[in-house]
Image (cartoon, rainbow, N blue to C red; front, side):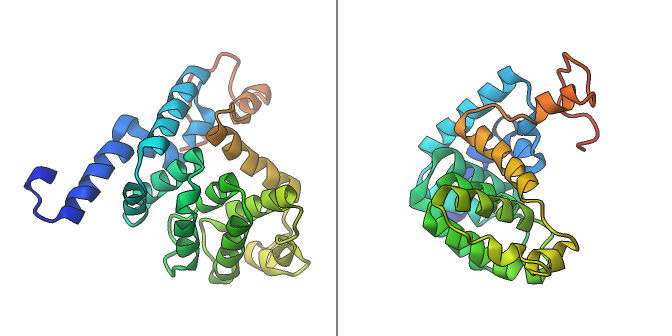
Length: 222
């Protein structure tokens, strides 16, 4: 189709969508978080492909993904996270400043993977607008990522949002549990670093699913 498209930008959009989003159903894992629950062999295959794509994708290709729809944006953020693409961290800062607030759930894990002071500043900027705005997606993982970066950088940025009757409590209606937030971001850090997220083992251990469970697409996830 792209060969018949006279617009070079449209041809690029079609090419990167076909290459990175639709390939092997990758966007389904991104939008659902199902990669956290994959059986080990499938998890390793997914991680290898994600890291390979993160190395191969050019900055222009990832920037193009970030400007498209929610699923393309999610894949673009996962590529930045898995590849530790610090050359694209300015894109995260631009996203945090935009008025568009849909599809931001992956901003926090991506900033946490890059792991610098600039990434913490990006999350602070996003939370300052997202919490009063009442975003449904994004604030929880952004706050979890900010706690992780505070621990890493010996900083205290998250306290601005966690104070009693502060922005988070007014947004969520209850005080945040920092330990629970840290656990939630740790799952994604394990995934992007090539580790093994604990979610699957915990579900089996807690009896949600039996030992030897091979699926990942069953309730209560969808």
